Length: 329
Ligand code: AQP
Image (cartoon, rainbow, N blue to C red):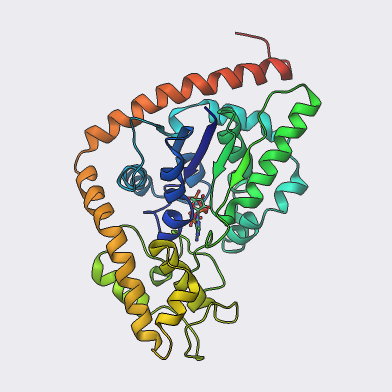
């Protein structure tokens, strides 16, 4: 079986963007591939994070995965910091990654812009190297991510190719799996930026944990335009984003949705998008509530996941250590 790896940061509860852009694909692909799905807590501390929030969010993200349909019996579900090979390979690959290429990463540029200069950590800068390590340790063939992660996948491939060329075939070169349409869900308040769980404005995102009233309110307040016609065009980024969300959930083509709303105002359209989202999330939310009340069950899953992941990851790490010239223990 071919291998899949992907992960999400417990930097908050997951958003509709994380769900529609990535998690739904994980569920689709899980039975076809040998799948490793991870909660990347080490990535989450690249920006300041309260320990108690990190603990809470790590459980939440794990519960979100399972509630969205990830089957813990079928996939290896684990927490990044529990498999120390991630940190170890990351150090080695840091020594095969360049300052220049890391400085060109748009996520680094976007995130560091929002921070005080003295608060930009080395960890935020080398974030893509840790991500490359996550993927390469499992010799993943495919990495299902949202459009925003395409550049990080490219640098992963560059680092792996460089290492293979310097020594010999060591890493499988992974391919991104990104949906052609709607792989980027936008911020409800600034539809030219992506929806992010760590946004300071809570009206900017829909969380999988938002209740019905909050979801309705957030869509009502979503920023659109003064054109007043529901149309799928770059000139109306707010409406385009709502159409994307509606279509991704209902599988209705854009032109059919546009035809349904001919002559109707935005208010009706926004309310209907909210209802579509509410219906999609309802069963997931019920499962999340249930799972979070059963932490023992979640603990068992991530413990057995870490054991399985560790065994695979160690094999790659041993190979890499030998190639760079580290003496065996
Ligand atoms: N807006 C989005 N639309 C589609 N896909 C998205 N993803 C994230 N935002 C969108 C995908 O979700 C996965 C999880 O990514 P992550 O948690 O590792 O970090 P991220 O990409 O930086 O996501 P966030 O929500 O924006 O987190 P913060 O705010 O902490 O930075 C990835 O597959 C990503 O493509």
